[in-house]
Amino acid sequence: GINEKIQETFQLGFAPASWDSLSAYLRKKGYSNEDMQLAGLVIKSTKGSYYDRFRNRLMFPIIDSRDYVIAFSGRTLQKETKEAKYINSPETPIYHKRQTLYGLHVAKESIRNEKKVMIVEGEFDMISSFMHGINNVVAVKGSIVTKEDRK
Image 1 (cartoon, rainbow, N blue to C red):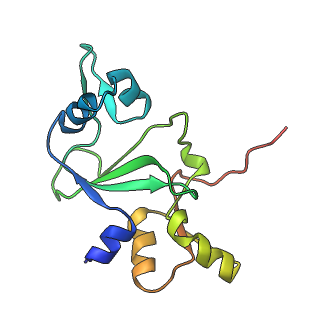
Image 2: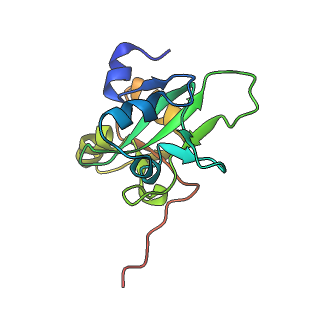
């Protein structure tokens, strides 16, 4: 039920069912395996080789309030699978899930105008609300939202 406008607004994509499509592409662009691992895009195996973290998944880029992609969440589209339904980027130098709200880049103006925000659990909850005209909504990325002690 996601139309093209929603796909474009949220920059939704798809990771192919390949172990190295993204990493091979990024290596051609000059990125090292270590850079890709630090960004949370690849995983280093116990044998020392690298493979793509996200495979055969609907991809949700996690975009900060300045419109930078800082992480990803990938959802399997297979009903019967032994893998996790969602796979998320790990914590990285630029991505801290407890400090991140999914959809903030789209909702920030509505939140500012309405002076309130609704917080929901996941990406599809946020997108579904947006599709129904509720634009001041964001989704948590961690299980809780915390305010860190600033000393």
